[in-house]
Structure formats: structure tokens, C-alpha cells
Length: 595
Image 1 (cartoon, one colour):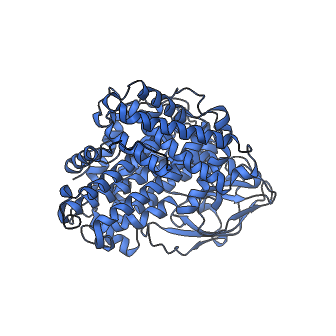
Image 2 (cartoon, helix red, strand yellow):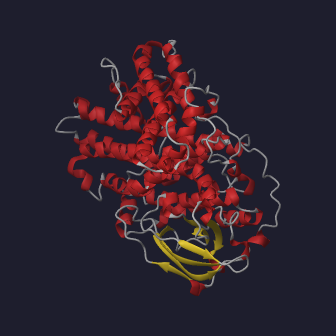
Image 3 (tube, one colour):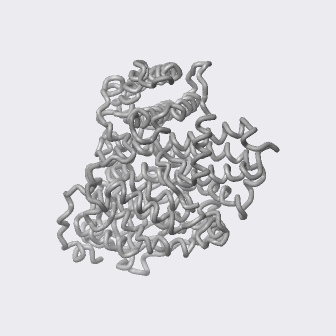
């Protein structure tokens, strides 16, 4: 492999912040999103070769849509996955997620197969690779190539089959063997990031990570496996690899031997936040399709304007998308700030967003009736997103892996942080505010404090003092209920034995971790609302969406809410209708979309 020769170039810009560069400003991000939307065109136009009809036809064939991949080639999407210091456009995690939403809004298989997993694989290289490895991977992506990544199932939630790779031998004599049945783009990627068992000893030092050039490996020692049959994400190439005593080049080790689990956890602090944030684009299309159907066909024989239950369902799904985006925003911005709790927030995002999206899409499916089974036509795209969402989120396996990351941190956070810390990270909640250049080597898995829970307490105190204006009377009891829930959670988590086997994985700690993610979601909503006051976004600065969001979270928590608290679905539905009519996104950014 030519990693060493390609890496001799000096990376002179490595330490320079880039957020002030016009190329990476908010205006530049908005322009790139608008450019992608323009290139994709109107998804509802049946004559559009990149519209829903063409996407559904490609899905039926089980193939990637060639025209869409060519569009992304021409756009240079791979540059978004490469750090700016290496010649790409990656500066911030939150803006990367925003840039991929137009792709996921059209086709989650396209977003995952074309680019998302190159971004996920790249995270390990940017976090632990030497200069030569980083230069090689950057040149590969910037030249239009792909990276594929194979995590072991417990670390990443890829539990299709319990198989893994093994690395044996010592320095200069390492060989790789084993099979992994499902690796996205394994048959199309030249760069392979492989997590493999390198020791039979128990503990976290039993795995290592490799970066391999597929073209430089002996062809008779590597075999592509057949595509794994899937109901969803049919246009995403899920194949696998089999290595048979394959020699590993001396420069193939990524980071230190035995540090594979540690590297995976650091990478997950980035990847677990951005992938669910990207997938919100698919939830946008599902909600938009349901609105389109309700507007043209009615619901239950009535126009949607005269069907209160249908309006509540639609407003509720919109609110759930906003809740999701609030937590995703905090998770991705925490990565840019280099907070120690980033890994916990990313795991919470990875766990909770698929649940909220699944439930929202399920509720929306009732509005479409038998049309949810349509695989083509105007509303066939809804059924495709229903099939794709569980695969994108990695289902229950991904949930268990995320909870396993959160659980060990609960005891320490409860003892030293909850109801003690004061909020100090306004930058977590600024939708368009600048951040330091993302430094993958600063990503940590150790949570020193919890600014989100501190924000929950501060926001509740602000509401008690009348900080919500006319809505204070409604929000005060909700804030009290949420602070009381945090207090109960603190008492239960402080009683856990720190880092014991029982605190890592059992039904009790998983239940506590589940409740904690909902508290974080409520805190994220409160933080976004509180720090929008006086800003240009009057809807987010208003309390209608916040009241609706907090009531929905309290319902999931099973905690009491004031009986007289109104759920302002009518106001939220009015905002949803405005965005639908004006064709803008249903996330926090209210972004103009292609008609």
C-alpha cells in the first residue's frame, strides 16, 4: 500500500480554525444546501429523472440510482467528509448533517450507500491515523473513491450475524482472517477500515483497527460475499468480505494495537450524532407525503381542516421532528466543542431518534390507510421510507449498543453533575453560530459534566421567574415535573455501583438510561427555545412548539402534567401548513426546498 509515500506532504493548515473562512460560513452552507436541492429538482415531478418515481423504480430493481450518484459526484459530496485541513470541506459535524439531509430526504439508501458510511469510516482515520494514512484516505475520497467500515457487532450495533475478523501474528508478520456478512459498500470501496480481534484476552484491549488498500491486497486472500437480502434500503449495496490468511502491510495498523474499542468509542462520539441527524430528512419526506395525501384525499372521509384527530397527528409528527433535531443539534455541536460528554449525547441521539421517528411514521401511516402499501405512484415514497428507517437506525441492536454506552456514565454524572452544574455552553443551542474546527483527536468518551441537564434546571428557573411571558403559567408546572424527574433519576443513578458489571448492562440500568435520554431531549428543546429569544426565528422563540414538545416527552416519561395545560396543536399545525405550502423543511432550520 502506498500510504507512506502519499503521506509525505506536510499538512500546513492542520491547526488553523476554519469557521471564519467564507467557504465554511453559514452563508456558504446555506448555498451548498440550496445547490443540492436545485440539482435534485422537484421530487414530485414524475418526469424528473431524480424524482420519487425514478427512486422507486431503482428501489424495485434493488440497485443504486446511477443518475443520483452521478449528481453527487458532480457536486463533489465526498469533499464534505474530508477535513478542511486535508483539502476537503468538513469543518463541523452539525453542518455535515444538514448538508446530507437533502440526500436522505430523497433516498435514505442513496444517502447511506453513497456517502454516510464513507464519513463514518473516515472518522476513525481522522481520529487515529498518522499523516500518511490521513493523506491517503483524503486523496481517495477527494478523487471520488469510497471507504467502507466494519465494526464488531456489539460496538456498533451491526448484529446481522455474530461474526468478526481476527488479526494474528506480530509486527511485520500480521495476517487477517474471518468473515463479516454485512459491510456497506464492501464491494465498491477501495479503502477498508476493519475492526478485528487481535487478542483472545478479555477486556477492552482485545481489538485493533486496520486501514487497508483493497487494491494492494492479494486477490486470492480476499473474497466478496453475495449481497445480503434486505426489505429496506434495497438500493444500498450490503455485501460482505471474507479474508483468508491475508497479509497485512506494516503500515496497515490504524492507531495502536489493542486500541480498537477505544478508537471506536471516540469515533462514535461523532458518528452516532450525525447519522440520526441526517436521517431526519427521511422523516421530513414521510410527513410531507402524509400531508400531501391528507390534502388531496382527506382523512376518514373528511378534509383535514375538519378532522381534529388528523391535525393532531400531523402536528405531533412535526413536533417529534423538532424534538429530534434539538437533540441532534446539541449532540453534533458538542462534538465541535470537544466536550467530554459528547459520546453520551451522541449515544442518546442514536438511541432516541429512531424510536421517535418510528412512532411518528407509524402514526402517520394511519392517515394514508391502504395507500401505505403502494410501492409506486404519487404516494409510494412513503412506504419506501417506512422500510428504510429501521435499517438506517440499525434497529434494536443499535439501541442496545447505545444504552451500553450511556449506562456506565450514569452513576458518576448523577453524583457530581446533576442539579449541581450551572449552564455554561450557550454555543450548544445556537443553530447557526460558529464553532471551532472539528478536531477528531479531541473527541472523548469520558463525561466530566452534563451541560444539558444544567440547562434544564436553568430554563425551569427562568420560567419560574416569568421568562416565558404569557406562557409561563403553562410551562411552570411542566418545568417542575421535569426537574423532579431529574431529581428522581439522580437518586436512582447515584445508588448504582460505579462501573460495576451490573451497571453496564441490565434491565434496570437500561430503563434508567432510557429515561435519561428523554430528559436530555426535554433539556435540548428548552435550550433551543431559551437561546432563540430575541432572535430572528419567531416560531422557535415562541412557546407553542415547546409546550407541545414537552407535553409529548412527559407523556413518554409517564410523569404528570397539569390537567389544564393546553396542547397548542392548532398553532403548531398552522406552522406546519405554512412550511408545507411554502415548501420548506420541517426541521429547526426551515430551509427552502425544491418544489
